[in-house]
Image (cartoon, rainbow, N blue to C red):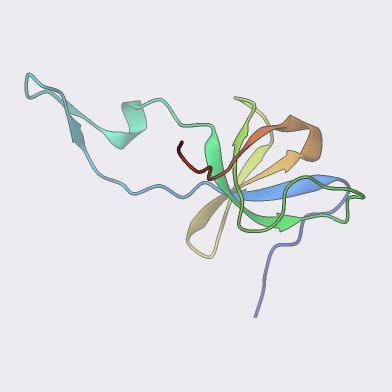
Amino acid sequence: MKELQPINQHVLVDITTENKEYKTASGLIIPDSAREKQAMGKVVGVAKIENAEVQVGDTVIYKKFAGTETEFEGRKYLILPYADVLAKVVETESI
């Protein structure tokens, strides 16, 4: 079994999306290739980083145009520097 392991202060983010067409209200079909990519994904690996604020399983928002996209065993990943992670999506209780 093979797996990707980030090294040198990098984070591995799963950015695989469903390939489906979107329709506008007027009925125009927008193919996946024409849509703007969302700068959000699920962390699937973290290099050994002291006091890392993200861990495997977290959903994060990262800088646009950051990192290196790669495909591995049918899934799309982004390998990006830890410093390019901007925020972590967290659940909060509503008041």
